[in-house]
Length: 300
Image (cartoon, rainbow, N blue to C red; front, side, top):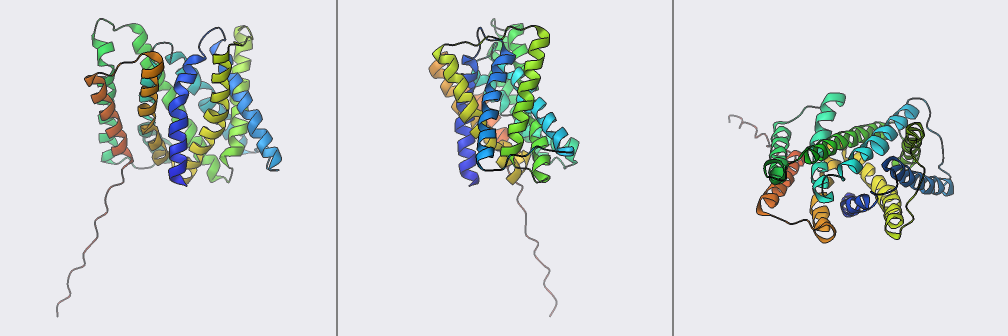
């Protein structure tokens, strides 16, 4: 079951980055995200109603769901949508794959879990990989402020994603299932975005092109309803640190999609950077070997 959840999440989320990029245009970014999660929440509420599992979170769970909506379905995507203005979608996905390290660091900060030396080593390896991957943009004539903005927004979005992971883990520890919490959290995130758009005076428009509406449907149903439910089930089953390992597979899918649709070109340096990022994530995920203790022989 865990393997199926990993594969589903990796394939779905690995292809959502290009759909996210296709939503950039005439429709304001906050509203594009709000439309996505309003549609996804409606589908989840319908499923819960049919299963007769629709119930409102109360007490501590209500606050946690609201916080999850803000972190995971609002701030997270605001960062990534804006980052996609400056970077190819595949490169944004590579930065997102550092979620494994962020989850380990946040688990230490908030859950008091010890960070092993291999996690620190994996994080350092991943950081070197990202610098290697972005080096042509950072050091060459093409280096500009936009690249740094895109990289910073991608890292900030990953931090928000990791925060949402920990909130989901806490909700599942309270006995709530991801299908239930996702519905309410997506609704909360969408309403925050709508309120912010009203305050900012953004025009409530929607792009009616086939590409935009197709991307919206793909992001809402497979990308949000299926993808987030599968991933957060992994968080509940394996913990946030190990669940984030499936993000290691995203860049492989996303960068190849970027080659097809955005004209991204592989270079030896970019390939080396990708390998370092993947190796760092694998090192973070890998469990240390336990050596058996051999008892001393008793004297005859």
